[in-house]
Image (cartoon, rainbow, N blue to C red):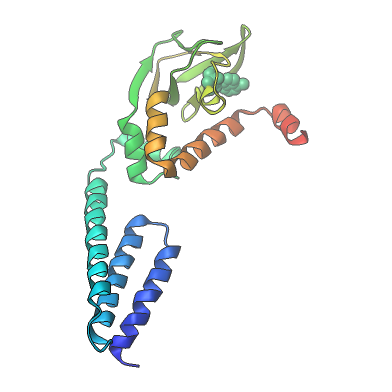
Length: 222
Ligand SMILES: Nc1ncnc2c1ncn2[C@@H]1O[C@@H]2COP(=O)(O)O[C@H]2[C@H]1O
């Protein structure tokens, strides 16, 4: 088998490997190398070059190169503050840096003063919020049922289930939090379907941690 015939095998082998790769950048790089090997094979091995195949492969290379440029440009623009890095490492590790950056772009940093209500039981909750630093009381039916602190979400229940606030949440001391407007979050997830699983995983983990042992055992026995 000549070197040029081997290039045909390399082209198809790389296409097969690219199907296994999850990182889109690597998938595109492998596809470019596969197309280049395909061009060599189709130029040298047949009696006359197969221009139709060669032109299509050049087209594929151009498309992948264009997208690689966009990906690299996007990745280069990722620059987190210390606070954002901490949130990324503690809560959003399952996100890619670019996905986390997209989430931050549609979010706002806010501060609630002591006794300030963040949600009101039975009323609409326009944002999903993540406590960065502070303490929040969760009041249901006039009684405190829980306290929420750093790294915990507020408003995730109505986001997942729909409907209004299941409880009133009030800051017990000055509380700094990341607020993600739900309309922005829905639009972001529609534009980036791959992020949907990561967002739901983060919110479900938070929800599971909030379940009391009694509630959890009731759920598992259902
Ligand atoms: N038992 C609970 N333990 C912890 N947090 C709660 C509890 N009940 C309600 N919450 C929080 O209070 C929020 C009120 O708005 P949501 O129902 O959207 O989401 C709710 C949770 O974030």
